[in-house]
Picture 1 (spheres, one colour):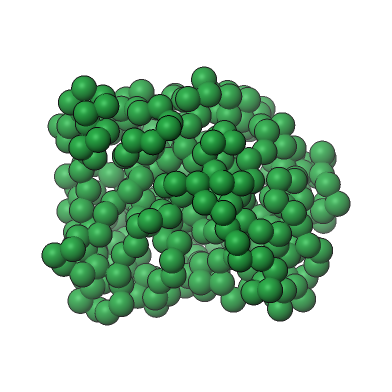
Picture 2: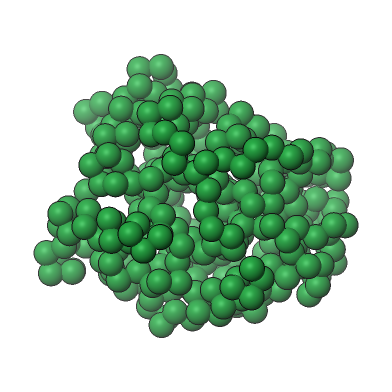
Length: 332
């Protein structure tokens, strides 16, 4: 998600799964995980780098956001699988000397306000090599140490270039054991990765009980198959709702969130106005304001919305978070 890009993989890879989408299994009731978010939450990614968006200290992230995702941890070239994290030098300079001590204090202050803070791995240019058991150990050890040092509450998986599903699942399970019951686990798959057979669907099936929320990126995408057996086009209510139901066949509604860009500059394609976002929320939670896809049974417990990013939202004066936050509050 770091730099806008065009998602050129279209229907060919996903078409074989259309029939499977129609017959997707119904999610079964399972215990609510201890690492839970408030109802109707708004998640935003904080950019630890400088681009055209507004540089922000974590302290200056809008109070509209319930969850702040720090983007991103970086691969450690000295230890395969391990990650590192610290304030980007360019961001530090842009903010007049923002440093690790200030970041840690800001995270603590946000948590004291009831916000949650997680650290993301991946993004458009990032990757983590979990190709072997030693790599998994390096990842778990390094991530847990960073989380303890900064007061980070969990992991966001935003790997966009493929990963070893079994090893990623093992890493998540071990992190949960290391970090305890308050561990938050979020994921930001691309659309193709949650079509039938996609890597994220496989991962979700292996760690379902540990997932806090999955917020698919409904942007930077080609057309996709919806769960109603029809092709849906990016930029429409149906593109959001008829793909969200794929996850709703596997997960509880409170584990499913909708990922959209905050502004047209925040993504290569797929920006929709807040009115489309709120229509998608209404369709899934109440069955109103739908496109061609209407859920047989609404999902009033749907988790909320994610956006890339808090920085692009700030650059537009809160044009995304303002109306979306207000609408989420109206649904609680």
